[in-house]
Image (cartoon, rainbow, N blue to C red):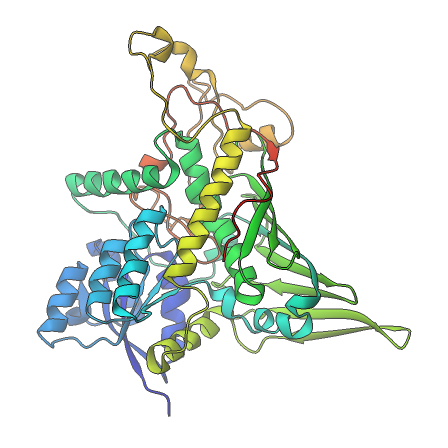
Amino acid sequence: MPKTLNIAVIGAGTMAQAVHLPVLRRRWDRFVVTALVDHSPRRRRESSEVWGIQEEQRFESLADLLAAVRAKTVSIDAAVLSTDGLHVDDLLQLLRRGIPVLVEPPLGFSAEEIAKVTDFERMTGRRLLMMAYPQQYDASVAAMAEQIALKDLRMIDHEVLMPASQPLFGGAHVTTSSYDLPSEKRAERRTALQAAVVAGTGDGSTQRDRDLYVKGLLTGVAHQLAVTEAVYGPVARLRAVRHWPKGVIPGSIELLGELEGGAQVRLVWHYLPFAPEYSESLQVLSARRRMQVELHAPSHGDRRSTLSLREKKSGVVQETSTTATKGSAEAMWEAFHAFVDKGTAPLSGAAESLAQVELLREVLETIVVADGRSLEAEATDPADPADDPADPADDAAPVVEAGSAQEAAVADGGDPVAPGDGDPRMVVSAPAHVVDPEQEEDPASTVEPGSAAEPAPDALVDPEPGEDPVVDAWSAPKTDGPSRS
């Protein structure tokens, strides 16, 4: 009989309550929640009451939890880290105690940050980290390579339509939350997270560059890359990048890439705040077969993916279709159990996250360069009045709020509608699909659409004077650069 693992849930935000805790309760035969950590007293109390976690199992900080583990008043075999904001420092505290961790992406915002984890695993010679990409473990995704092998692969076309929060989490039992930390603590977290994002994007990045990186790339396209990698390996070369519509963040992102062996990959991620539901589909082609895979959001635990295959046999077109027997989140937790109990290697860990963030940084740079700018800071002459951040001319560029009438106007080819006070600048909001109900004020959260799910901090969405809006860009990077493995 499989061992029952004692699990610590660190961070009680949307993904913990909508995805992880329901699976842990359902799979009582393999998991038991022995600790819950959250910095918000209200969220800690309310989520614990909903999920039946006793007072002595609730902790304000990871330090408090580890103190209880050392005192042997709490026993944990593994942890899920779904905190908002920065992961690496908390993660390393757990890894140094030999505790395996399931981590909500993004693991980090820069290669240097993630390298701290890869260096630790290399030093210890043991993998202790598994990334929480549920669709990697979905039965339909796992069966893709059985139907079309890598050697026969011609093309992968992967499209995601991301709606606002209600279609994603409206049916989940997510408690209301209140970001009730002291203001100085909130400011500290905001500053640390802002610094980490700037380190990932570059000193010359604008606020909209950072928003696009966090909300669109690290938490949207990253999931698609993870699915492709789980089946056929990582994207080896980036061919072209496009972002649109003009001035809308995160908007729509399209990547064209190539796998080792020459198969082409097209990834399209749309944030569509008015879409009625989440949609994710993959079309995979070989010379003889066409495969279609339909996936569902991990928060929709009662829905199952499907895999359809069309091919011609004996002159007759035949189609077969199979449906997965369990949701992707449950399949991921079964894989995590095998990782902890038997040492089965995860499909995505620290090393894979490092390669992924390097590729996504290249994607961001391609978009910015196509806009005639650079992510590297440029030296300026302080005596030059053109560099004065207070120049009124710098405030002319509009920023469009995702999910607003302004975005609809821009998408239809019109100009953004100015707010009632006459200010032409709109503040870019975090994608609604990753916002906890009642948690819009959280200043230190980051997102993972379809997988991770906390809102981006206020510090990451305030526009900077002098920025130009992100523009539609289609460019082809160098095709004979180094391959990614």
